[in-house]
Image (cartoon, rainbow, N blue to C red; front, side, top):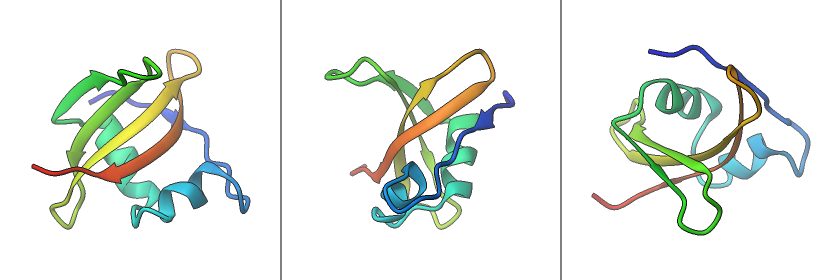
Length: 82
C-alpha cells in the first residue's frame, strides 16, 4: 500500500466540502486512493481515478491529481453503480 500526503482545502469551496456534498468523508477518500480495488483514467480529463469500497461497503470512485510522487490532491469522489 503506497503512502501519500493528501492536500485538503477545508474552506467553503474546497475539495473537502465538495466531496462531503457527495456523502463521502476524507478518511474514505484517503483509504480508497491508498488501497484501490481498481485504477483507471478519466476519459474527459485524463486524471487518475481510484475505485474502492468505503467502510460502510459503498463502491466509491475518487478522481485526483498527483502533484508529485507523494502528494495527492483529491478533486471529487462519488458513489458508483456496481
